[in-house]
Length: 216
Image (cartoon, rainbow, N blue to C red; front, side, top):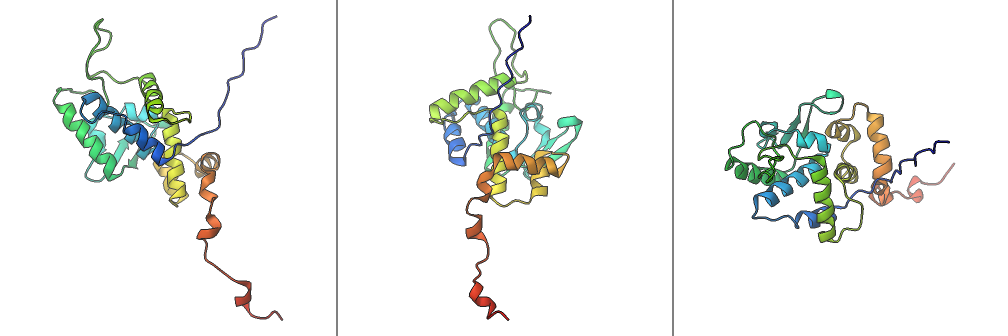
């Protein structure tokens, strides 16, 4: 009798805090081209909320660094959208794109390989693989002393949680993440950003039953 395969284990979302992501970013070299590229890539994942497949498909022309936006031409279900990026991330992208020009890559993705492999299986200017990014994040988290699980989609979770805690309207978060339905975003945030309700009472306008005057 055939045995049934083990059910796939699902972990609860575990967003990273801003200090945790910054600690990982600090582990990337500020001098080597690889470090400059990786720091920009991680910042885009974290601060735009794009999916890993969307980030790795970006071309340099998809970035509008003046207006601080990034254009996704083929998102989930082949839907295009424009997402926002912040000035700090813009600066990291600009530094990488300036560095990238020295290699003369043409037609290559924005985040591409810099050197090839001795066996010729990897050539300069090739698209980065998702496994490379996953392994990179795991190395950086160990160096940074981060104990949570870290993976590319977790940075998307972290971005959504940050926006919720900052009080960004739900419909804006929906557009930023590229969700087709607002109900998807609502369910998404219920899972990953319970911290958004912590301290909510302290932020609401104060009131006192005594201000209502005597009851009739």
